[in-house]
Structures are given as C-alpha cells and as structure tokens.
Image 1 (tube, rainbow, N blue to C red):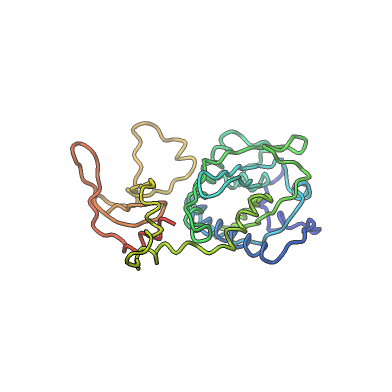
Image 2 (cartoon, rainbow, N blue to C red):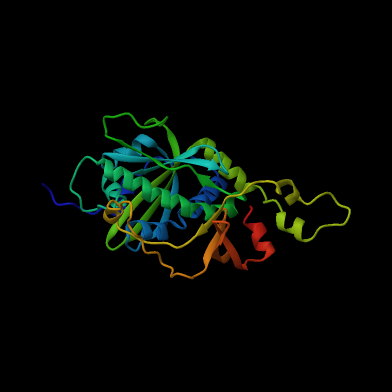
Length: 309
C-alpha cells in the first residue's frame, strides 16, 4: 500500500497546456469576471464545510479539449453537475480528480482507489454549500437573482463513458480555481459550454436596468416605474436562527433527538434573507401557534430594492 500524497498546483497545470482556442479579449474578460464571482465565496464555504481554513483563487480561463484535460488527471474523476434553477439556462460541470474529490469529502488522507457512496454524498453536500455561497456574488454581474438545483455527483473511470452529454472531444471553456489551507490543496475546474458562455458574455455587455433610479426618482405623469412590472413577483424569504460547523463524521452520527448547538444564544436577533441577501434583523414571536419574526432593524429602501436584482 502506497503512502497517500497531497495534490499540488501542477495537477491542473500540465507541462504541455491544452490548446487555447482563439477568442476576443471581451470573451476572456467576461468569463474571468464570472469565474471570480462564482468562486468569490468558495473559501468561506469550504472552510465551513470541511472545518479547516481555506482560501480560494481563480487561476485563469482557457478553452480546452476535454480529453486533453482528463489525460492529465488522476482517475477516477468526479463530475459534479451544476444546473441553474433560475437566472440562467444550461449547466456547468465541476471536474476534480480522485485526490481532490477525497479532500472535498473530508477524507484527504484516504488511500482507497474507488470512491465510496459516503464520499460522493459528502462531495454533494460540500458543493451545495459552495453553490449557496456563489449565488449572491453573481447577482451584480447577472443583474438578476441566481439559484442552482441540488448538485448531482458522477464518478467515471478512464475506460467508462463520461456522464450526461459530455464527450471527450468537446471543446469547453474552463475556469480553473485552487483552494489552499492547512497544507492541503484542492484543484477545481468548472466547465462552461459555448451556449452558456455566449449567454454570460451577452449579460456582461448589457447595462443593468436602472431599477433604483426609476423607483427613487419618479417623474410626475411619466409611465409607471420599471419596478411596477415586478411588484407581484414572489420572492423566497428565509429566517436564519444561527449556524454551526460540524465535521462530516459528526453529521453522519446525527439521529432523531440530537441537539446541534448554534453560534447564537437564546434571545439573540435572527436575520431575515430575501434572495439570499440579508435585509433585516428581528426577534422570534409566536402568533396563533405559528412562529413569526418581529423586525427590529432593516436596511434602507434603496438597499432593499437592490436585493431584487
């Protein structure tokens, strides 16, 4: 049995880099902006999920043949399907090699070859936390709320077909990112197909709708403000009682009757979120045997309007 090794930055940076397709600087610029936004909150998300400090940086954006990338990576490969629920169409694939996959599962020192179901479930949970953190930073770029469906994890060996509609000869845009913490390196590659890249670039070249200006400075006798068009749109509201950080091994031990200690004390204010953005604080009350929240502080009207974008 060989000694487990920790992956290095070279795992996603082979000596002979895959061929880069010609593209205008605007395409690279917009996809780099997207990559920075997507991975902006990945460090805190991984810190919470894996219970160790992580910092994440984007290494760059390239256009590659998928086969060339996979030839450089240790199998089995883990493909995490990231599909949009709202805000955009299509989906991404987060591709990581075996060692990085074990790190995402909270088991970086494991010497096993085949990933077990407990690992894929842990990876799915970790990526879902990353997606929850990625949505708010993307709102300024997309000028709209973004949400993802729960991630789906696929494992493939070198002699097996790729999941979904992926093919080895596909050319895709690739956002490479690297997380580092406690001498552990996590390399991630996020795919963007041509259709999704075109949609992202189209958003990057358009000006956001001046919703705030139209609402805050109406002109008498003018047409209704643009926000009037969305006044009847339903938005998700969530109240956060508190947060906790747990090791995966402790999560697996949870059972009915288990108590999870949160980072807030009894009586502390709870936070109210709309579109994953905190807009108010309040206290829990009971109304006719139902829970409610009495607001004690709230952001300004301008800031509330910006959360709708």
